[in-house]
Length: 262
Image 1 (cartoon, one colour):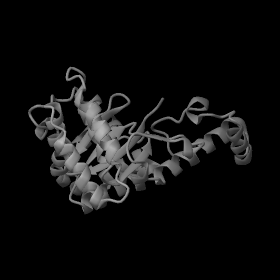
Image 2 (image 1 turned 180 degrees about the vertical axis):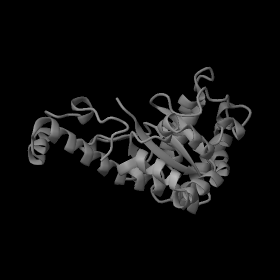
Image 3 (image 1 turned 120 degrees about the horizontal axis):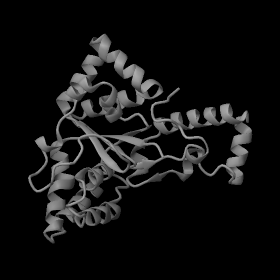
């Protein structure tokens, strides 16, 4: 199915305030903290999805602790962060996959265990290995270092350019958003599932309106180009078949490789 990747700027104090502290309270049977967070945020942020935030947190509070943390609480934290801050989407271009090719780029990532509360089990994996999971985390200092090295190191510049290709601008925007707010950057898969042939059918488990749409438009352009190449059809013909329901999902018609960008 490939991977729908999102990048979420978030600081450790925000993790504690929005997620760890209210989650711990919920697991102990106290929902007052989460309701206070929702109430206060609703005053600060127009159209904050307070009830959805509360519902997801309550669902996560009952998560089986024997299940991998990256598939439960950490994935959930990525979903939750998307209710509070703008985030970026790219199809397939996970920094985790870059580490498979260039392990030395791991110097810009932090171990989750280094700052997770003691009551949260260590994740089985520090990077993405499957769908619906959390991936790597970059600290604020690592975000700044990666941006600086992209500018001054020809090697790092080339590595990022070669890997992200058409999605490079989106990834750099995620880093810049994190730097501007003094945040780290969290990677996750399937917080949002983009339907490239009909963006209105995109599924998002967080706040869709806080997701920058640029990456989805890039995915749409690549998907249409692939179908045109595979079928010889024009964009108008493709659009008509989508409208008729004959192409219900580009992902099932011609799969976009996670490392292939235009």
